[in-house]
Length: 138
Image (tube, rainbow, N blue to C red; front, top):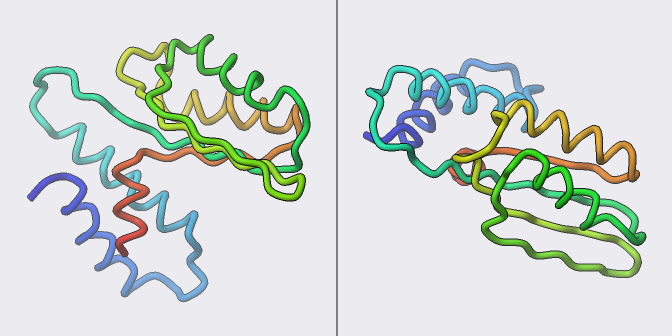
């Protein structure tokens, strides 16, 4: 069983015992902790690509894409794919990034991106791509 499938199974068990008030953030945090635990126990092998989904949402204004691509470049995070759209003045961007050569871990990247989000007035969400898919399956 791969780590994502195991994390999903364990999370499903936990969800049966968590209070109904447990929100998406709680579930995502549980899955992230489980995957981190599983990764720590894996034998070290060739460096694997760790893809992260960065989602940015807010009112459109100039400089949003630049603000976030600057943070990613400073952290040496590779942009694998990017899509952005503007609908009735609302901005939405989804960026898939690769952390395998980054100067920081996911927590450091999240902190830097959230700080920049506050500076430019948008909301930012980050999570591992495999975790996002796993949580959406649950």
